[in-house]
Length: 186
Image (cartoon, rainbow, N blue to C red; front, side, top):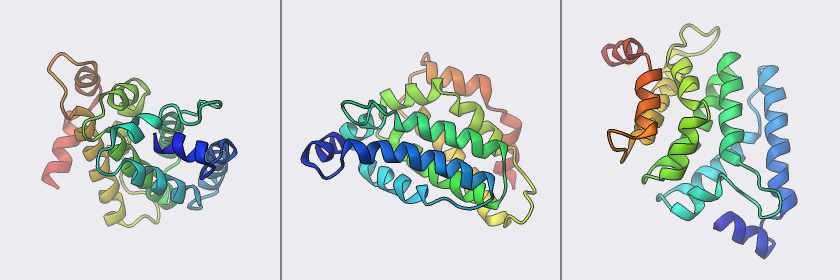
């Protein structure tokens, strides 16, 4: 609602929403070059929109902009997927920022976003991130923080789910429990 209202009021134009998509493409290029992208400030903005579990703002992330229909959650999921295959210090920092945004988008819970993300491939990506270790030049604390965020996103995805839910099934069939056990004892 806030994004749509911001676009209607002129606070955030459709062009600015489209710029988020361009920022994403620029962020992918910077991540490939090993640099932390300015896209992170846009992610922080989206994260703050979802703070307090405001359902209207959370739902807007899947269809932002009335005319352009930009799916910001899909952009975040795709970006996180790309980062998970090119891990370096800048990727870990950017991945943590993406996961903080994803976490706020599902908490409350926001069932629509939970279901969307569960079918977007994010469960596999989070599982891949949990298995990361010894990234050249990356401080162990930064890597551990990223892994904790991945676990928190899993918790957010599972919040309020009943035993027969698609989300629970996706997590149970995808997550390597030995990886989680290894995190718990370390």
